[in-house]
Length: 363
Image (cartoon, rainbow, N blue to C red; front, side):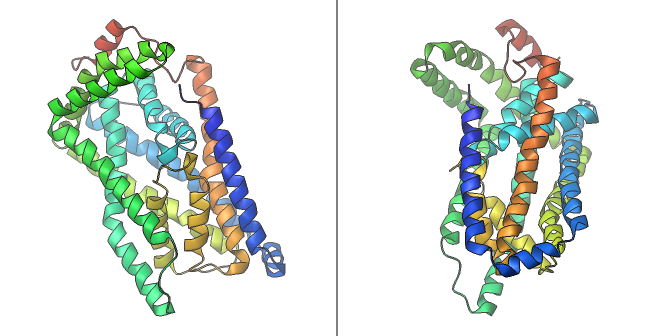
């Protein structure tokens, strides 16, 4: 079992150290004066936009499930998103949220694991597609700005960016290959799981053995679900694409409202371009929740259009709304899920026979 408490403490420590360092480097008399003139209505607006982003993701999940012939209540979709956000915020590359969301889709809406996996994968795929489309225009905007400013680039950003892009492409390539060559994917996953079972401590062996038992069915369901997205589920998939675009526009607007609250009027093209680059950098699986990396990268990128006197405040406010609010909202949702399903809500207590029944495509 993943030690989320350990991840949380590590993430919190790194983030707090980064925040203190940024405050120390940027706070001056002008910063105090700027804080006296802060417009709280815009900060509250930024917080409301963050909450709206949860609703948009829940709606996207709902339409993707509808593509596969499953219905989910909006309330359950909302809980699903928030619970996933909590664990995503505590793990490198945000990978911890997906397995939990898949389990909750199975518990709440009786969606087979393979099809739930297809839905969550399609969400990530649409996000990745959005960033791949936006990346080249964003880099063009950044380079044009730096050239006009007479700069030679940003120290360290190129390396981080390339690593992030490589990670993104590798993840997409592996998943797409699993769709094109499912038999090969089955063999590889089975070999990996068998090897893992041999090396794992005794207490983890039953769970890994169950994964070996169900993996082939899950891959088959995953592949058939993906094909269905592109056939009978096209209309709902188009709606999900719409929600993806709106979600990221809303998410990127959080920073815009924070800056308006600090009486800063940034170049909107530059504001959105830097956040596209920042989001890709945060994919790097270096620290839980990208703590430290996100603060440093944001400090570097936001310095292109935010005055030095409020730069630290901007980074901390942005991180608080887009990260710590996620943890708080996710924690509340997780407590509700635990009250409903018990302490083992994020695990699987089913027998292999029951699991096979649930994974049956005819169910």
